[in-house]
Image (cartoon, rainbow, N blue to C red):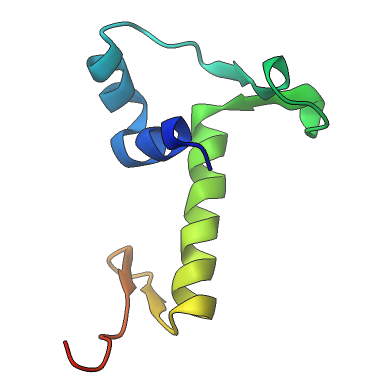
Length: 83
């Protein structure tokens, strides 16, 4: 994930628009700078957010031995020893 992608994931569309002082397009064409992406390289903010959340869910559950609490939509990450 690029730094801009991470910023978008953290701030969301409205946060990015506030930071950059302008309205952003709904569609992002990643093939402008890179190639070979599915869907002709077109993506949207909601789809990018969904993909990003799936990555975090997988990291929390598979890499950090955590859980997802679906009732309040949070991640439960175990403490590291010594903390």
